[in-house]
Each structure stands twice: as structure tokens, then as C-alpha cells.
Length: 336
Image 1 (tube, rainbow, N blue to C red):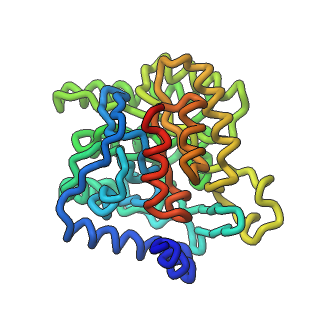
Image 2: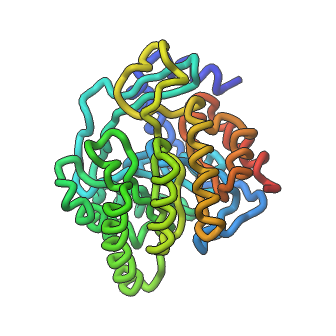
């Protein structure tokens, strides 16, 4: 009931203004409250890390790590921040965030807007949170595709000592040509270079920080098979399936449906889960999968686990349902 009232108030504002206000409130809450403890419900070991529950926050809500301590109070088993790039960038021109309330969906073309990896790193160091923290990294829009690996490695070097795991985002539809990096040869070259950097950093820091690859839902069966082959060959520690979609078939005719950008929320569930299912078949349990996309209730979270995921992330569902969604999903996946 309380969140229903809060949502009505927030939805009266421009989506990006409401988002910034929510982050500000969470940041203040995190500053005044004592450190939060994650709700433990059937802990699970993934990537060599012990997660207190299976439900996490997807990247995109807190791009700069400003509200980690406030977000920790919502009951997540893990939190992923970012996407962050080596250098600060403003992202795409506004407006760039649109609600589709009838479909419980969101379209965004934010374009990796963030303050740069140094600011995020400072925020992480200042946070009280001691739980599992993923940091999602990407390339700057001005970096030529031929030098994309340089950006990922530069960001990896800055966050390696601060992250529980690092997510490699090659699947946002809002940075020109980024999804080309999901091609078999391009991905093979990129991950090869990143793994070399990871091995060097592991020796320097004296600990191994896992890598997760975040992929798109707009992939055919052959592309999924190719990605599975590449991540297996390079011993990537997990795959996050999936990012937002370019498809609009389930929201056709609705206001803002034709806006350029990635679609998230309820309409993404089926396509994202199908990619997850196919990927799970290809990987045969060799590499864990973190599911993301369209989780709006506990039943959807459970369906992701049944399709082959080990962990589940939420974001758009949190905007529409509030903190109650986290508790519901934790309960629904407790005995999975």
C-alpha cells in the first residue's frame, strides 16, 4: 500500500527525474541507517561466492554506486551497479527514459550515462555494504570499436579490487555498434584480452574476481550457441541473460512504444527466458547463468530458475512493484 502511494507520486514526474529522486532518497537512507544485512534464504554458491539468497539488483538503477547502502536495505542477495565506463560521459540526449504503464514496461536509451569509473570507485570505497557487489563495465561511446578491449580493461583495472564480480556489458542497444561484440570472432578476441588482464590482476591483488558476460535477448539459436562456445573456451565465470530488447511486438500501438531504445519489464519475460533456456542447454551446467529480464513477480523468478538460472536479477519490476517484489522473489526461489 505504501509503495502504491509512493509510485503514484513518482510517476507524476518525468521518469528520469523520478529515478534521480529515488536514488537520492536511497542514498540518504543508506547514510543514516546502520549497515543492512541481507535476508538469508537457502544460501547458494555461484562463481565461488556464497550468495545469501538468489535475488539481486540488475545494473542500470545505480550507475555510479551512489546508493549502495540504501539499496542493501531492500533485501537483495547481491547488488550490481553500473554500467560504468572509464571516462565520464553524459549519455544520449534527453528525453531518453519512457514508461509504458499499461504493459508494466520501460523503454530507455540512456547510453551509458555515468560519472566515470573513478567516481564509482570512490563511492564503493565509502559504502558500508559488505555483501556481494557486482560492478558492470562498458566502453565509452567515443572509443572506436577496434579499441573496445582497451576500455573494458581500463575499467576492470579500476574496479577489480572493489568488486565481488565484474560484469562485461556487450549487449546494451544504446551504444552504437556495441552488440557487434557478441559476434563469435569479436567476442573471442575481446574475452581473450580481458582474461589476460584478469589473470594479471589476480596475481597483483592476490585474489580471483569472477567475470560475468551480459548478453542480449535478440539472439538467434546459432548466436547463442556461438556465445556458449566462446565463454566456455575462455572460462568466463557466468553469463547474465539478458539485457533489454529491441523488439516491440508485445507493446505495439502503446504510447512511447516506438521510442528508440531497449525495452524492459513484463513484455521482455518470454523472450529473455527463451534465450536463458537455450543457453542453459548449450552450457549443460558448466557455467552458471544469472537471469535478468521481465521478472515482475515471484512466479517469474521461479520460472527463471526452472529454465536454468542459478541467480535472478530485477530492475523494472522493482520500479513497478517496489521492495515487496524482492521479498516475494526471495521466498519463491528459497527452495529452488
